[in-house]
Image 1: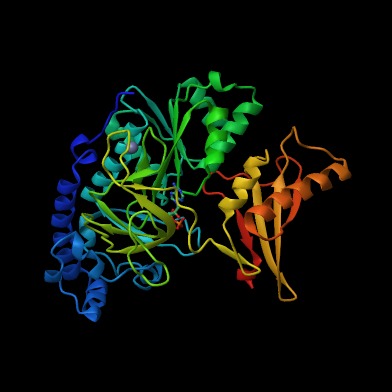
Image 2 (image 1 turned 135 degrees about the horizontal axis):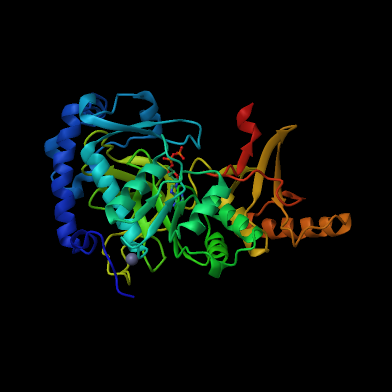
Length: 435
Ligand code: ADP
Ligand code: ZN
């Protein structure tokens, strides 16, 4: 397949040139932050680091980290590096982990962010011939506006649907021949399910690609969405703190996401010691914004658990790749002392032939953790024979026990009994945290 790039020179730049570009940007950025963000200046002063000590990317490890706690402390203006009159936009995190963060953008920041999203769209084969349906939420959440901007830059005919109103999503998709769908993977699965119910077969659907992100999803879920919608499904990653979607994006190889490393420098650290780990190690992802003006975070700890790789990619891009994040250090559940990620449960469900419609409920009763997984049966699986249901529950609980090392209580529910998500899915109810 002939490869298209949105900014070929950057996307296929040699390692040496990229490092030189990153180093040049970092030196400038550290100076900008030191001079304009008293909060970070005092963190640098505490460590005895001056901007002159940072001569290039190899010195990055000397800088202090920023965490979500810092963002909370500094809320709302404490990390702003430009006068408010130079800013044109505010976005906010979706608050998955309960703590909202606000981020500011200059016009130049918006511009570079939209370029990143345009790279992602072009990497899926997108061009001005496409109709791009953006079904991420528009508003404080970054998804809608980010992909909308990228779609404009590519020159696609943009359908700014926002999330929700699935009937209307389907009608516009079919009537206006949408070819690219952008939304969360859980919403894509729901749209697919609704299309199927209305009798559409994959070959009836005009879509050819999907750009799905903003939440973790498994390979099994990708296969399911690709089959129902008759498309290739691409992953996209980002967070409000760095801009929004488009920090990294998947290419035709579909084996991880290329990081837009001319704008965001990625490191993997040991979450316990803060030590930088070599390429290929699993750890916490840390990003440094190399050229953001209004809200430039240096060494921001994302809490996302990930692996980086410089293995040569068949698409020709030389940008470093990150694996699908395996969850966050803060969405890992510790149940009866065992580490459990929702993504592991999802993997088991899809392998056992269930749809990814589930909810994990954890509680503490008499000082013991309880661990329940509610799972919907599909219409084909549905039975009201108690004996059969019990057998199926037992088989599923066993499969989970093998994956996790602990035994959940599985409860099979009738189809459509777990609320669908139009944005990020709510997979976990941890009642222990609510006490
Ligand atoms: P919140 O922290 O409230 O969810 P954001 O809306 O900014 O705030 O979401 C950013 C987070 O979403 C990332 O740190 C990551 O955990 C998750 N995320 C985004 N894209 C992906 C993706 N493609 N795969 C897995 N997780 C993702
Ligand atoms: Zn590639």
